[in-house]
Image (tube, rainbow, N blue to C red):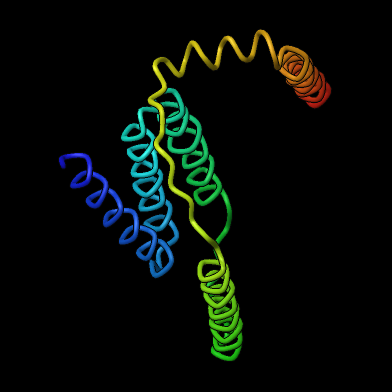
Length: 164
């Protein structure tokens, strides 16, 4: 019973914050509200006993992406010289795109047959992920680690060339 109350509370906060992100006129406020929305998504993961995924949601999206967005907002110049005709054209295109998306989602929802099955609780998601990375997915894991190492070395080389 308590899980359902938490679920509906998280769902309400997620829906309200998603609408607030879209309707916010201030870009900084929209990014901060988006951070709150992403925290509610992490709450859903915790509710589903996916602790590792919830922590990664907080670290990567709330801690990383939101900070990058805020730096992008603060470090770029802002132009407020948008004409009323351009605003009207943007709004019209947005309304058409949203109506098409809602129609598409409604069609998909109506035509989908939902199957429910009892779920087994996962005992330890972190150790399961670690075992999978080191057994079944060891090659992709190592390829990604070498790719990240190459990107890091490349960034250091580019930074040193600009320095000299």
